[in-house]
Image (tube, rainbow, N blue to C red; front, side, top):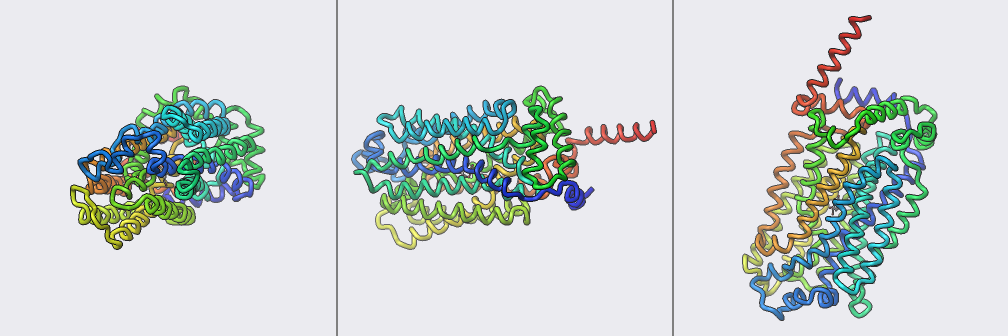
Length: 517
Ligand code: BGC
C-alpha cells in the first residue's frame, strides 16, 4: 500500500468535519502554550534590567558597568546564578513532565492541564512579589511544574481532538501561542523597563498569572478527548463526544479504531518497558532526538538572552529590549505561515527548508560578529550597518525555526506515538526538551564567554546533523490518521527492518487463517 492509497482509504473511513467545538477546544487548550512562551521570553529581558540586577545580582551589575574589571566583553554577563534564574524552571518542568505521564494516563489530559494551570498562577505571583533570590527561584520552579504538566498533556490532547486532516494545523496552535507568549513578554519587558522607578520587572514577571488563570478556567470547561475517555472505560461518553466534535453521526469507524487502539494499549501494563521493545525503536529515537535537536538549533539563545547578547555586542539597554521585541514579532507570523502550509507541503519539506535557512543565517551572524569584535570583544564605535545586519539576520533565522523545528518539534512526536506508549513517549519528549533547554539556559553565558563569535557555528554544526537526519530517517506523516501511523514505519527502508518480525507474524497468522478456511 502506498502512502497515497493509505490517505485515500482513510478519507472515506473518517468523514469527520472541522467543527466549531474542535476549534474552540484546541484554541483553549493551546493557550497553555501562551504561558509557556511568556515564561520563556520574560526572564532574559528582566535579567538585562539594571534595577533587577542591582537588587538580586549586584556583582553582575558591577561587572556590566565596568565597576569591576572583566577580562573580556564576551564574558560580561557570565554568572551561573544569574542563568539559574532562567534555567531552574526547566529542572522542575523535567520532573513534572515525567510525573504527568501517569496523571495523564490515569486521570485524563484535562486534569493534568488544570493542575498545570494552578502551578502557573502560583509561580507567577511568587515571582512578581519576590524580595529575595530564593523567591525568584522558587517561583520559577513552580512555573516549571506547570510547564511540565501542560507540555505533556496539551499536544496529545489537541492531536486526539483534531480530525486527522487538520491535525497538523490545529496542533500548531500550541506553538503559535508559545510564540505569542514570547512576543508579549518581549513587549512588556520593553515597556515595563521604563516604569515604576525601575521596579517594572515585577509587572513583567507577575503578569504571567493572567493567562494562567484563563488556562485554568478554560481547562475546567473543556471535555476530555474521546481517546482518553475510552482509555478510562467511559465508552458511551466517549462516543457522544466524538459525535459532537466530528459534527456527524458517522463515527463508527473512528470509534472502533479508538477502542481497538485502547484495547491494545490496555494489554500494555508497563509502557516504559514496552517502549524499549524493538518494534518501537523508531518512535523511541524520534522521542529523544527531535526535542534534543530542536534545542540545539540554538534558537533559545535568542529567546532567553537576546537582550544580554545585544548588550554584549554593543547595543544600549533600551535598544536591546527593543531589538528583542522586533525579533519576537517574527515568531508568531512565521508560525502562522507554518500552520497554513504544514498539511499541504508536509513535515519533511518544512524541516529541510528551515534547517537550510537557519544554517545560512548562523554563518552570516558569525562573520558579522567576528569582523566587528574579533576575540577580545571590544566594540569601540558600533557601525549602524552592523546593528541592522545583526537584527535582520536574526529575524530571518528565527523565522526559519518558527516554521520548522519550533512547531514540528512538538507536532511530529505527538502524532507518531501509538496509544499504548503515547504518554510515556511524550514524557520522554518533554523530558529531553527540558533537559536540553536547561543546558542552553544555564550555560549560555559560559559558552558565549568561551566560544565568543564562534557560538553560532557550534549550533550550526548541529543544524547540519539534524537536517541530514531528517532527510534520511523521517517518513512523511502528513494526512495519516494516528491509528494508521504504523504503516509509514513498515514502508520505510530503514525503520521497516525493525518491524520485520511483526510483519512476519501478521503474514503467518493471515496464511494460517486462510489455510484453516
Ligand atoms: C520550543 C521552545 C522555543 C519556542 C520558540 C518551542 O517549540 O520548545 O524552546 O523557545 O519554540 O518559538
